[in-house]
Length: 515
Image 1: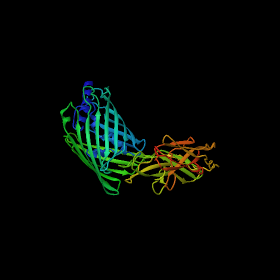
Image 2: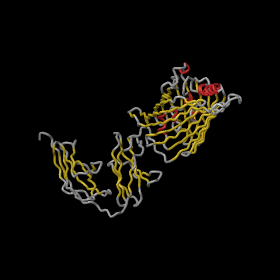
Image 3: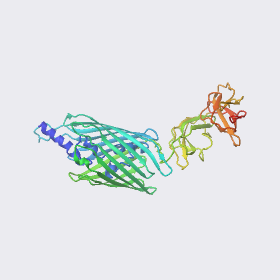
Image 4: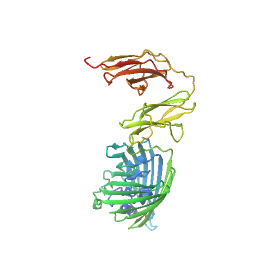
């Protein structure tokens, strides 16, 4: 009787999942080919170039870089003969370009009596997999003729465990890799290699490679059509059915920004064809989705998904946008704060925007009316006793703005601070083709460092030369032009960001060699 129960459970696990796996195949982990999430399932599984929600780590690990806040999703699938399939996933951004996700999916056959009451019922059987995903957006590739933006790579590691009629089987490690990029804001491409791993118990993993192309056609501000087409190549060498090419196509129609109608079709799979479904979205809060997927062999299946979002959104970079500036710092004074930063790495930066919010606030407000171009510093008037957070963005020649930089904090306070002493003794000299600028130490304990300003003959105003406060009372300047007179002056800066009056001006001109 026990052998009969074990055989029946084996049939449930070996036969049913293969009916509904993408293309068939003989595999120890066929249940991993059952689509996760009602939204992608209703689109016929055409989701490789979308994968922009918490279920994205199943379809394309790189896609989760589009998840801009903590997002969790759960799916329940009513399977056959009282079997069921459940999926849970949580994804979260670590910063503007990095996301992680954790997920679990399980195929469960409940305990059943295959003996007609003559023996002990067979224990429940199940396949369970846990997945960790890491994804990173590496930015854009820009040329004169085109831009490939938001180039993202992702990887997943899966641990799979099986228990069949009370008997434990060997566990298995599988791996996914994904690529996602935008041709423009509306067209994306995606490539995924899924379920790579070694054979277990003489069976292969359900390894497959998918290529997807999606197009988001905006009709109005609150309506549009999202289309995706996937081409899949299963690579299970244990079964010739896995030598087929499979094609999936799906579409999602959006109404009023909250209602969705979906449909899709799979070609090359003898058991599955069309799928339909719909959904409701409460923006930034939750989603509820449904998919109806009929099967030729055993009838219809129903998928229901619920998704919830938490926390503030972390901005995602626009395609072709520059990277943000680095090393943002803020110093506070009496009703003032000064924000400084290092420039972004790209050469087409035309300016910077500075944003602020009260600590704990949800939205940033821009401080400057036009991009800051002359200096990498901005001083503003604020209220004392309030903690502020500041972030800076880069703007390039195409008018595209980066995501926020890391934030800096400062709290303006009136604490009797005074302007530090004026620097004196500024002197310039020439050595080895460089100009050396030196000045007297103020010997003021309140001084945290110095700023060095310069201009060339013919310039209208001085510009700050250093990006960070100078800790010594001297500086050596190289790479300057010959026979051009440079003018220098120095200020001292206190620990709370208060700057002294300008020093006297000292100048120097590098001679041409041989004269």
